[in-house]
Length: 283
Length: 309
Image 1 (cartoon, each protein chain N blue to C red):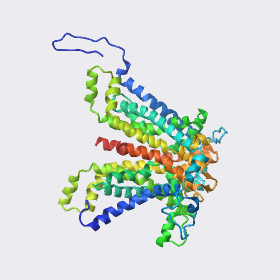
Image 2 (cartoon, each protein chain N blue to C red; image 1 turned 60 degrees about the vertical axis):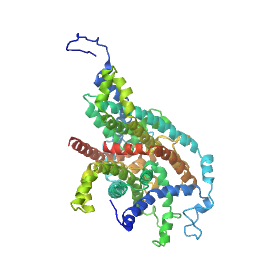
Image 3 (cartoon, each protein chain N blue to C red; image 1 turned 180 degrees about the horizontal axis):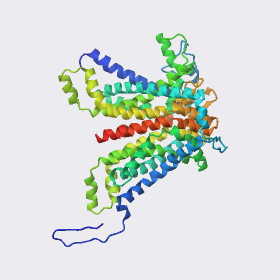
């Protein structure tokens, strides 16, 4: 829309986009540079003449070595991956089935149940974490991965269901009817005709659910206690801060490595992620 | 399934087989069963437990007795609770205004063709997809009282002469968590609103431009009204998330200094998990409920109105 002279393009387009990009991406740059900066430079007062904040001449892997050698970081990564994968799988199965039922079957309670699931989609984790922690302990699954694998679906399923409903609704009814005329049962028609058509939607739901469970914090913080059970976000918080002492180098290294899996998953499925995001918003 | 052929063929009635899954109601309930079980066990039941907890005086390891509304009555006389209410509303209102304004601006900027469009679009979402807690540590390090790079930049430009205590001063700490929340939320607003913008036909803008409408008028009379449904959903969703936010404050300030940045969730955590006063913590969490409930009802009505239009 902004055409014309070069300075107009700079002032109204390039400059604002550049400022936005710097604002949004600088913390990640800072994470990377801190990871490889030796402690001597890290804790140099900012008024020192030889303070070079934006790069380092002596990159080091000491922080990474500390992270892998002195903490159970690899276990946190494994725990997070395991929990994210299993809870995503559970949520996908539940969400696809529920989405199909709510969008393509006629039954009395469809409207009510659809509303109920939509409402649970809007329940924030922070509303229920205290009674949930009590329940988790009563079920004797506290401090195990199952505490999270079973509770994460509460915020993943509503999202998956909602997203899948949108996809299923867009598939023409005739497709299913043809299969039924050819002798397929309802179940078969769903499994072999409708679900394969909805694969892009399932991918969106999958990638979104995976990042959501990878990033979840408060349940993991409250339900897990022993260091070897923790997920990356909780492990980094509780094991790399001792009282008031922050191990900034390893902390940033952990933050960087803990962000990479979601960043990679996301980069492969950007379009699916974006359509999941916007699809869930439009409903 | 009974098949009846009419016209010239003989009437064939297939033997009715017992296939319960052909009945839509039965199949639907079967398909919904896993979902309803999980949501019942881990949403509905905890909700009821939460209400029960809030009218008891339970502590960690000590089953409570019924105390009525004592916990809520105590909150009303608790100065920290009132600070929490004030903080949460300020935090939610200020961040939402900024996220909407900046997000809309960014969406409009990116809603055109330029060289690195796909690249830019992919990268700006990073703050939203990366684990918030981990990203917040980068911010905490940037806000560090002695080694802050932000202070260094401002010092070099000549804006300040002594270090700014980003997280050490009450109102500045509030500003800091607001900045970080905006940082995380702008990508979500921008991408969602951009999807909304793409549904607006460029013909409308051309027609208006031919009729002599200035860019600002075109925005106000075409873009804004057509974008309103998407904007509403995005804003309401974001308000719920922000109102119930936990991670940013937990990492950056822990609610301090002197409770200046405590939100409902962080205060509930401090009482319920930190100090072990389960019932009081549950009461603080539930104090969020009326507003969340109001937003959800509003959203349901609004969506229904849009859908039936």
